[in-house]
Length: 379
Image (cartoon, rainbow, N blue to C red; front, top):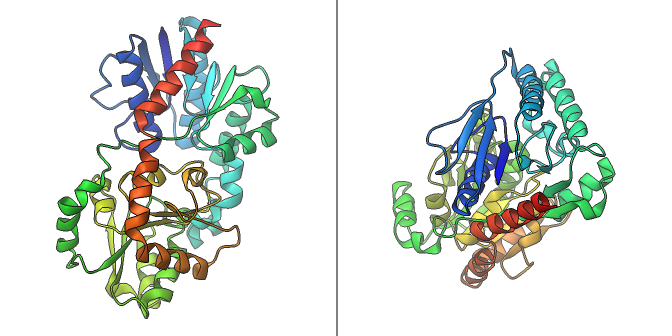
C-alpha cells in the first residue's frame, strides 16, 4: 500500500516525530510504501520512505498551520494513496491520531501553567489557539474520518464527549517504549557515571523529573515535595531534565524552598536513557498529557513511576506495584508520601516496572497500528 503519513514536521526529536519515524520504518519493513507528507523534513528519512514537502508561503505560526492544512487538502485531491493517516491537525484523512489529545482540554487544564506573567498580560497566542481548535473540529467532524486513534482511554473519552465521535470508530493504542534503549542495565554504567559527574554517589537517593515545559509537567509540585522530604531524607537529590524558557524562575523557587544545593537542572538532553539510569524514582505530576512517553520510558528503565490521572500514561501503572497515580486533588504532601514510599521499596518496584514495559514495547504498538491500517485499507 501507498500510505500517506501527514504531519507538519518530520524530525528526529519530539514525541510525534519519533512515532512517525518508527511507524514509517515498520510499514516499509512490512512491504508498504510510506510517504511522509510534511512542511519540513530532516535527513535521513526512515529507510524505504519518501517525502513530499508542502511549503506554502506563510508568515507566523498560525499562518503556517492553516496554510499547511490547505496545502495537504490540495495535494490529496490530485494524488492517489491507499490510505491517509494524519498525525496532526489537517483534513482529508482516512485515519487521524490524537497524539496530542484535545486542544481545548490542554487549554483548560495546563495552558495557564505554561505562561509567564508577561505572556498572560499580553494574551499572546490567541489566534493560534483559535486556529488549532478550528482545524481540530474540522478533522473530527462527522464524515471527515473513518477511524480515530488515541493513545489512551482518557483521550478517547474526552474526544467522544467533545466531538460526538461514535465509540466504535475510536481505537486505543497506548504508546510504547524502546526497551533496548531504555533499560535497567544502564544503571551500573552510564547512570553511575552521570551521578559521579554531579558529585553524587550510589548512596544518594535520586528523584528524577524529565519533561519539556516545567509548568505543564508539574515541576513546581516536585520542588515542593522535595522540600517537604529534605529534612527527613538528607540523602535525597532532585535531578531536573528538559527545556523550559522560564528555567530561571524554577531555579529561584528551588532556592526559596532551601533545596538548591540538592537539585541539579541539566536542561534539554538527548540522552534521556542515561538520566533515567541515574535515578531511583521518577515523578511526573503533569497537569495534562494525553500519554507522556516518559511514563513508559521510565518503567522500561526500571523506575517506579509516579504520575497523575491527567496523564493518559497512568493507565499502565498499577498502584503499589510499579508506581503510583496521584488523586485528583493531590498536593505536595501526597506526592512526597509516594516518593518516600518508592524510595523505600525501589527494588520491588523496579522489577515490576520493567516487566510492565516489556508488555508495551514500541514494535508491538507499531504492529498493532499496521494491522489496523491494513484492515481499514482493505475495506
